[in-house]
Image 1 (cartoon, rainbow, N blue to C red):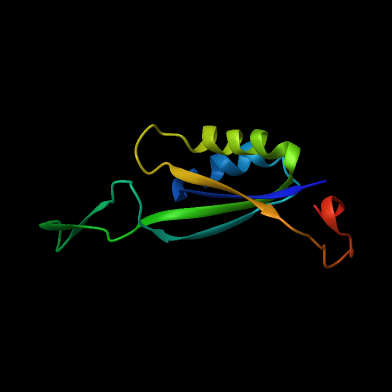
Image 2: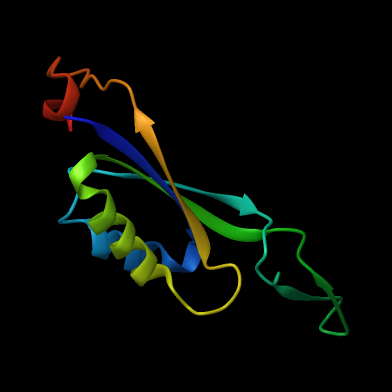
Length: 115
């Protein structure tokens, strides 16, 4: 069976909602937190005892990565999109790519069994 890698870049404040949405749909997933710059409006930060402000150079983002069977891609992608949707620019993007092989290091299982 073919496998896919779903990589969703979302707003960091949406981690809990996305995690809850896909928790029962996938065998496991990874979340990486960091900074990013895209189409979303960046946060204005106050400085100098509240008298000045500046626009943050980056937004706080999270990347959610899951490996799924080809047949599960639409369901998982939709769950991520629905959970991270705010209707504003900067909600994020979802990228789906092919996975050639997977090996579970502990169990030595390969392919779909490794998921």
